[in-house]
Length: 404
Ligand SMILES: *Cc1c(COP(=O)(O)O)cnc(C)c1O
Image (cartoon, rainbow, N blue to C red; front, side):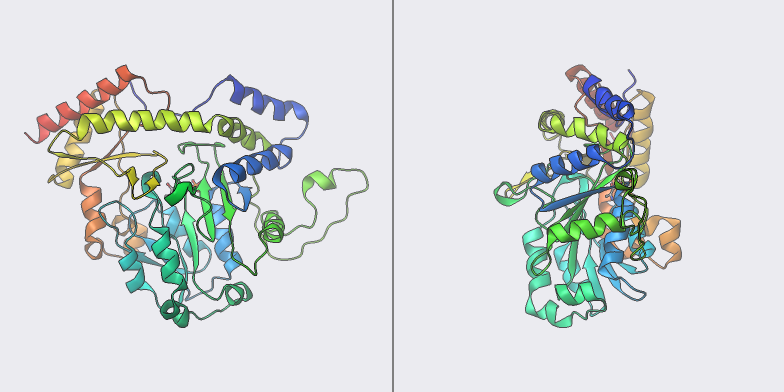
């Protein structure tokens, strides 16, 4: 049996929505993007939502909006997809990496220790879709001790008066926080990824959620950022295409990262059925949990803890007490059965670019411990019980072959 790791969810309604955009005569940013923004806003509870062409470009733009300059520090976890830290470099800042905890997410204690007078933002990542401890993180940045250290170096930072919390919510659309609050609404800014492998996709895309505290006006900010995502041009292509609407101005130094309607159409049709898709992901997650939680050698990932609930984006299985080499051998054994698995994530300090920047994996022992024994199993709505039984057997057999 061949089981892919993460095929996109495409049905006739999704194809029809894309065809509708193609037939409408308008394929770039327009009504479908607006409709997708409205869906994500309603679903997540965010105050405003702006769609762009990727998580990465959205995060870079938000850090540029914050006024990140050379020497400014942005705290990120060592254990994440590299885009989290690369966005900081692109914006001109310096990423400061913090170790993770047992639950894969950034250590709040680690954040506290890493904060300096140069810290301008924190980018916690909801790894696998399991939310970080935002009550603690928001409390930390609002504490008088941390606020006292803060030095604003831009008008936006001046207005905020503290460290910005930007949630890398690439995995966590649909996750819930305490009291049913959804990811996307609990931090100043949260960015979802709508890349092809994510829970909801537009092939490539990102959604920026805005919940800036007073005196920021999120609606006005949405307008400002929308323009910034379109080269800071005063008229978008849609308004310019109307008769007599040719004159425009460039009001600042923006980026060109808007989402196209053909892309938005995919996500729009997926968002309409997302509660069902999420239930199916949860079904898969629980089948794995039932199969592995009774095995003494397996450690199952967190999903429902202290009022938080995952978006079931990844199933990050860990195998107790094995070495990196054994993990790799287990993956080779599983691959022989036709099942595609993955590893999330190679900690950034193990990758060449970051090593050359001076990061060392020895400084992030928990990130390494999570990585060395981790295997991500396929998790998506289309998986049948027969396929799940096959995957579970493949994993157990591989463990027995390599370790026992
Ligand atoms: C996928 C991912 C990103 C990048 O998303 P893009 O939309 O591809 O730019 C960022 N952070 C994490 C944790 C991711 O998994």
